[in-house]
Length: 146
Image 1: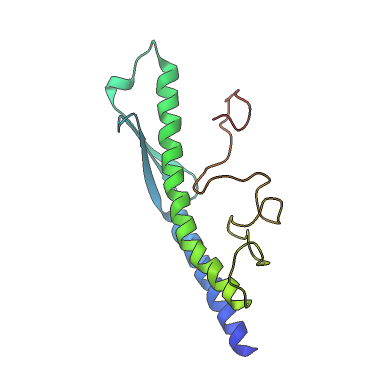
Image 2 (image 1 turned 90 degrees about the vertical axis):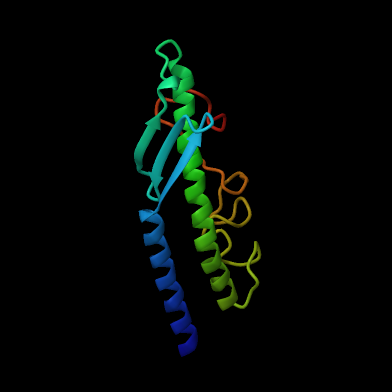
């Protein structure tokens, strides 16, 4: 029992360390063949936005906005990929600690975004790996069409 508690404590420390690393990490996404580049932190903060002057057309602001959104989403997808990579191994360790092989039958499935829809901690609808779900303030499109 003592070994089990020590192992759980180590995993908790790994989780906290991974969460800290991810919140401090930065990723840059791009759109329009690199004409728009956005850098975000793991905490979701937009820290840099670079626009090639050729995409700044006062008569076509909508395209520029779409490129910015795409670049930010690309950066968020990279952060999500890193999170899945780091936290996925910890989730597997937790599953092993409980004597399971992980997956949907694991009581901790979904703890880091995995698991079956409808399970605790899982989204209501299935999404592809690396998909960023959310809404953009001022976006008048119906949810899920972005």
